[in-house]
Image 1 (cartoon, rainbow, N blue to C red):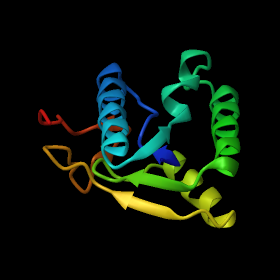
Image 2 (image 1 turned 45 degrees about the vertical axis):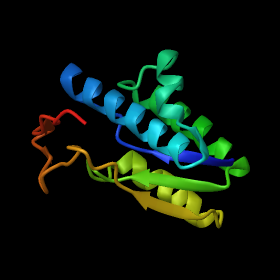
Image 3 (image 1 turned 30 degrees about the vertical axis):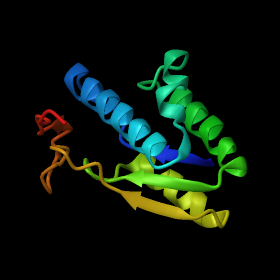
Length: 129
């Protein structure tokens, strides 16, 4: 199994958006396992102990997650819901360190309109996968 870092949306302005991102991350992890990868997603682990709404704690969480990239075989970016600023930081980090980047979509009802993130509000109701 390859060790892969998952990049998917996490930060949220509403509880509904946060729940959607958590469900999407779960689907991304399932997809990784189905493809023979061992996924790691710091944003699905560290937010249990760090407040993602606090800028300093969010930065600490991102930094802690990036450290795992040193042992990862690839970064897998899930794009059905778009690419966020936090995801782009992970992509840039992987690029700087020469780690392969793969872009994947889950499909099965996961999609976002071009302007999914507008006015700091989530504009998507996810279909059931």
